[in-house]
Length: 154
Image 1 (cartoon, rainbow, N blue to C red):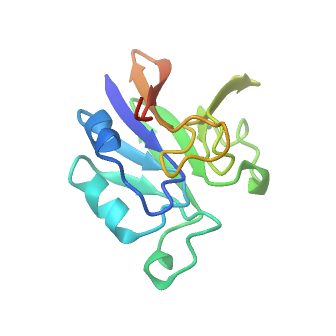
Image 2: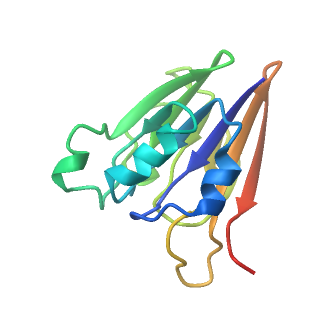
Image 3: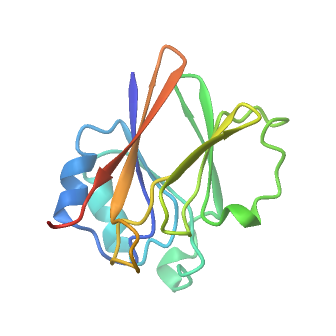
């Protein structure tokens, strides 16, 4: 089994609760709007990180972060992009199993044409009435399970 910690829209803030929730991940995917290199450095202390640049990641530190990434886990091909409306790829034709994206701050999961689309929500500052959370994807025996982890202080 491979456990993928999925985080997005941190906007420079990395919560202790997020770091705790990501422990045990085999890899971590950050779906953009990272906000600072300190966020990535903290995540790299836990597991290898695959990050993409979001629309707010424009400072010099983010210059070498790609706009998209392809990640393989347990034979599954995962495509990562920040803003899904910017995707110009036929994911089915490319053999992609999962699309991870952020931007909306709204956690979501949907299967379209056999492809799982997963948004972990926002792990950064609270926005409107949207939850503060991150996601987890577990891939085992070709099955994909997804979860969200609440990060809000109650």
